[in-house]
Length: 301
Image (cartoon, rainbow, N blue to C red):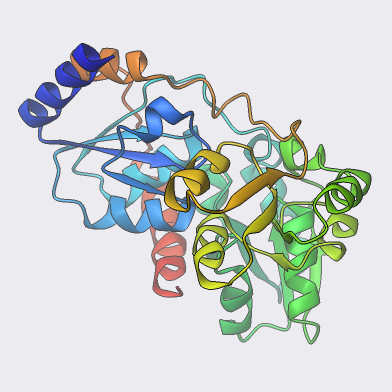
């Protein structure tokens, strides 16, 4: 493994590259990160990096976002098969139809979506800033795509607005059931429960807080609790254990695993840097339209 890391570091220097890694990646990939974070943090880092090459260890829509924000840079993925089922649940034509039916509504698109869908949006959001994004809009009616559960959670925080939800969801977070949280709380009665707002409403109701991954990491260091039940993709547990070795973290469900996030390996990172072939491209017309919605999102932290 050390030889592999040495080769990666050498190529990173030669290519003037940076490795951006999502919190759900496997440990060996997290260890390679120049920046480790959630969708919002990675988007911000992609926009400001001075590197010539961005190696994006996440899923397709994240790499697309990086390319849109840095069109002059080369964005590559270690595995092009790392997609997002939620992002595939809505397309641009479907969003256009919604806009026709609700002409006065603002389109808020979760960043877990394709570039083409972002291009049809007024603004994007992440799980970290979704509530702030919706509150910032003058429109009283909100079309929210593609995640109905994140949209529902945001709607509970902004009850003065009317929401039109798309029937999309994250298959991984859907695997966390209320009974899983109840069982975990019985086993760890002193634990603070943090779940992702992509979870079912019934799961969120059982939690102490609904937070994005970056917010979970921050919260774990801010409060005195020494035990936590974590309701999101299990990859974040490595980050939490590493950052807070004196605290204990338990998954709400061992089933909450994103197979696409697990496709990337350190070896694939090396191959991507050697070959420079797995490049992400976005048509200029789509990128230009999507960029506006993404940049508006980044301003609301």
